[in-house]
Length: 341
Image (tube, rainbow, N blue to C red; front, side, top):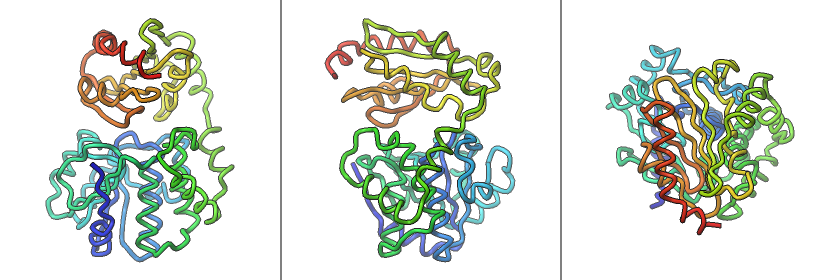
């Protein structure tokens, strides 16, 4: 169910004396671009705000304007906790529940009672703990919704170059540079407005997609040549990377971004999963084609969720045990893969 309470968001935002924007854990282009875009816009209309991210962003995103002003909870816990305790509005951007910020930060957020918690997101099933919701699963990205909020609040004024740049990052990273299926023409029209604001779209694409390290390329090559498993008769594939394998290639946040899509691109494959070792758990990234609802598998079996064709989940089992469970779960949907062309 979509809830587009832009009036509610505007009410809390305009009344805020100290507003904190929060990203989800392992920040991607959408959560970070949306937060930074809103940060620049709010600053321009005189709203005091800060951004807290649970952990650092990948290097291909940390060039965005004002990223150096983002508080990283992982390394700046004291400063971040102080901001949260002083906040009267906490704005949750591109996630639907506190736990999406990770164990430590979600605990801190749940203890903040004096602030009004509001949300802007495009994932399904938001928790019922927020004062105001813009939660629209038909949107291609949260950046789309955040842009629409700025236009409502500014009577469709042209954004600053910095705000537009950040929103554009969110828009293209969550749409595959407009290559994913769109529900309507809105993302393209928003893209045009951001170009009108003066963004350098070619430069932005280069910063995001042509910013690889040697280690990242070697890791991707190893994953595709040695760790890609195709279950041909069941129409799905997976890649698994252990902590030792990630360490061998000096893994940095974001190095496996997009890797699961290579597995999905194989002829005849209808779904793909990337398994990576993250601290004390296994992180699973799910992708699928057509109308196969991969988010159902993530939510029912791996404490996750997401979109129809893109979702994530976690496992507290070992890598080998997680793969065994994954194979058992996926085998139950062989007929579904065959029927969703």
